[in-house]
Amino acid sequence: MSPPRSSQWYAGTDRNAYIHRAWMRRGLPAHAFDGRPHIAIANTASDLTPCNAHLDEVAASVKQGVYEAGGIPLNLPVVSLGETLVRPTAMLWRNMAAMATEEMLRANPVDGVVLLGGCDKTIPSLLMAAASVDIPALVVPGGPMLTGTFRGVPLGCGTDVWRLSEEVRAGQLSEADFLRSESSMIRSRGHCNTMGTASTMAMVAEALGSTIPGTAGTPAPDSRLLEGSHEAGRLAVEMVAADRRPSAVLTRGSFLNAIVALAAVGGSTNAVVHLLAIAGRLGVELTQDDFDRTGADVPLLVNLQPAGQYLMEDLHRAGGLLAVLREVEDLLDPEAITVTGRPLVSYLGEAQIWDREVIRPRAEPFQAHAGIAVLRGNLAPTGAVIKPAAATPELLQHRGRALVFDSVEDLHARIDDPDLEVDADSVLVLRGCGPRGYPGMPEVANLPMPKKLVEAGVRDMVRVCDGRMSGTAYGTVVLHVSPEAAAGGPLGLVRTGDVIVLDVAGRRLDVELSDEELASRTPARAAVDAFAAPTRGWERLYVETVLQADTGADLDFLVGSSGDAVSRESH
Ligand code: FES
Image 1 (tube, protein in one colour):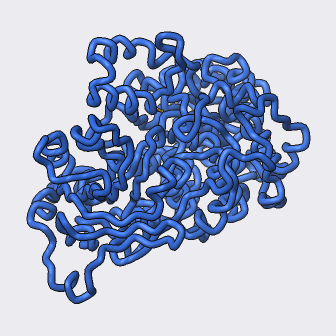
Image 2 (spheres, rainbow, N blue to C red; image 1 turned 180 degrees about the vertical axis):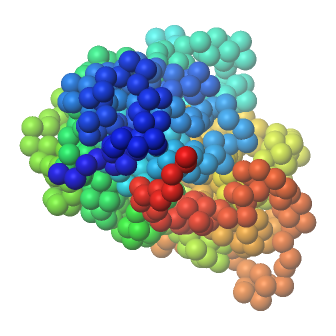
């Protein structure tokens, strides 16, 4: 076996090797530098990422496992993104987190890495980084929180915030009661307990083969999370010895497996941009159409909010992802391996469904077709997505007059205006929310219903947006419209009163305007003005180089891999 990568820093008797070892000694014995693997623990623990605040304890268990297997564990704090706090949107910083983690893994003497994530952007950014450095890597998902209750009823974290706030707007819930529910929403450590983006990305990470099979979805307070973390530390050492890198684990077959899993669990639309970005780092061919082709006919087998009723703790109790995947085993690539070196499908034999209210067998799905549909048309030339499982079935074929909002601020200023010319058949259009336009592509596509319609009992309308939607949200929402308005997409040309046609069965999104009419229009002034190009810092770099949602919204120069080589010494 060739010496590990870290030996490039530590081996030898010259001055540089002396410097590298001496500063790292601090209690480490001389044999720590004898060629044994040095394993980074890329740790997104942060008090400002409440969903990940417990990851220091997880890291301690990983460390024990690394030591036990003969490696040296090294805590590596990395950029952490708290979905609820970070402004203007955590997605603006996903690529920055990925870039910073990639560079720190490459720049430091580490041979492998255990990636600790949880909150929405953390697992995607860590996987993007590991894919580009391509050193042996596995993910430990931090796990969902336990189910909280309010007045005896389970609260779905995120999803019920939308529901309760709409009830206040509809006059069905007092503001005082709404605020009373606040302390019940987050029962324990861990990330959101619905099938939102964090849960989805943990499921997807496991289906990709990047976790120890069976660990994703373990609730954060469950002692089995620490047991899995210990095992992950051991496995990282083994992976270095086997030279098992992301490029060997994350193949096209793995990504297609992830798409099957995404559909079967009713996962978040955000997984589309994240998986496209991760694949882009590896040079794996993956397009939006793969999500439609591979996922559209996969049945929905999991009854979790926001599409269903239960929460992540229930999914784990009912058998977890492996029990779900066993039902669709014939759709999975049998060759796709996991970080253990064994194929994902080899873990499905013993999986069982323990609660058929939470996980249904394939023969009795909650919905026959659960995947994400990709739409195209003169309103979305390069694509838009919709999650039919979270939509109102009657609205999946719809024709209605557009009511256009040029920005989130415009929306907030007018949506509750009693004189707003809108009815239940209107199509709400929100633009200026794409990667460049906001910037950062926020989760605003599930724009609220106009107050007067909420009061009249309307709970869903067709909405069209170039932004994203929270994985905890629901509704007939067409999102990720590409190209976005700020990049010259036709969404910037639509005017209030134009007729928009949504045809999910035909995979179309169109505005009833001729090509000549569209070509003759100039983008709405307000939509252009909403986009003020940043003049410095990350935002400037981001806006100048970010790709559109249909290819994953990575920065153009971050697509691809640079490997782990660093050619020059620091001294
Ligand atoms: Fe962190 Fe939902 S806010 S997962």
